[in-house]
Length: 187
Image: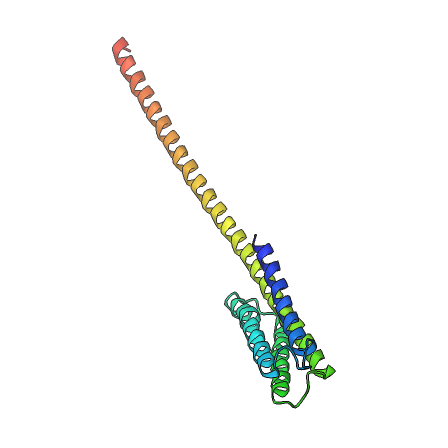
């Protein structure tokens, strides 16, 4: 169920950024203006990417740091995501201040590349959290198996001690019976 939810989340994120792209860059009203004003489009894009960055890569960084699982590959990809966030915010601010027009293919390319990197970072964070959860479940399973093994060993030791005590009592009883039997017969 979690994988289905994660897949739907990623698809909805891609659809949301795609819809923002369409309404901000491509779609036009009857008077020729974009469907979404440059200021609103810029704010939505920057906030969306920032939230995606915090939920995905930043949470993965914190989780990896807690578990001592930070790798060079992760650091490189995290830096790429930071650069993508900065590039998207810079492009959106330039679009908002009318330094570029929505017809600029450079701004469109920056938007597409940065959102793809952002969504890839989110997917990477989801995959890492799944792997971490599987590892923790396996460790819990191993701990439970060790506890069960220890309990079994303790029970086996207790049973052995009880059997040993019973055998020693039986031997003592048989020696006492033999001694008393000798006295009874007069030998």
